[in-house]
Figure 1 (cartoon, rainbow, N blue to C red):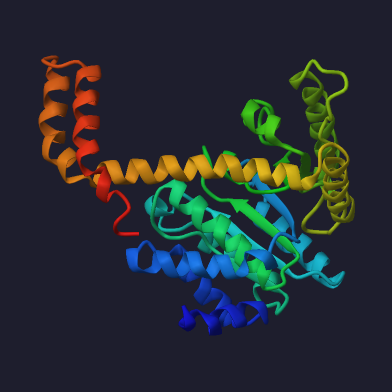
Figure 2 (cartoon, rainbow, N blue to C red):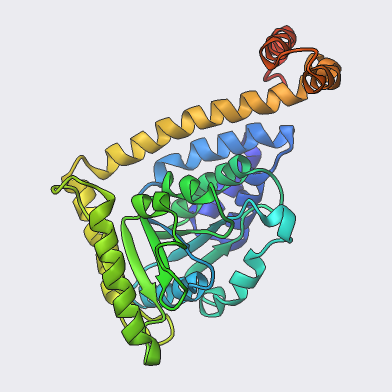
Length: 333
């Protein structure tokens, strides 16, 4: 597609305006944009994959965005280019909380060496995660060597982000009631590095206590004495204390991954998981769009709800109806 050549060249040259346009294309849900976005990604894929990919999540009020802003400024001062992407499936309900986070990244927002992109304003988690994954490839092709993916929503967004990054960072804080009650075990298990933010002034002592408690908790997560335990650090996005050690912990984890199976193997496994997630997502979308399924959906739901038909029998009818439309399943793509 010759019309994509200027877009490809613009992304590779680091043109921020054309990079934003390229991301808008891959985010598009319009069927006629799908083929163009696939071709764009095909052209740029070989230029991606060289960045340090870090996912960031945290308890409410932990100061994720302020921390990302302060860390990003430090990285830029050290010669890096930093891209910040967000996964926010809740934006359809909240109106886009990333706008508030963006204002808290004021230093990065004005830097020529930084690129901040909110998640799409609509769609389910699968669609948002897909757009974020593809955006990550584009910003890497544009020369950003650190990509930070922030979870803005709650729930499954942490799982989605952990499945697309090299290192998953949990940001928490002291004085938030019972620390361990506020953090799901699953998020602790996914975390590669943990930091207690706002460790400054009167908060320094409580932050150290919280870090010690979390370090003890991490020992109880697994019974394997040889398993790697995520380091639990303290830092202050306000003063900058601990940020160098935090970034070193991220790099140390990357080195650990390389020494135990390799970063390439980790990313390949993520791609395989993503492959089947995409297949499942496409099938689910196609199922709901199927004319035959739509024609019987309400009647079957009524029968199941009233007890006249079992869910098993109804599901069989839905799948049979869906099978009638499968020959045109991806015709619009």
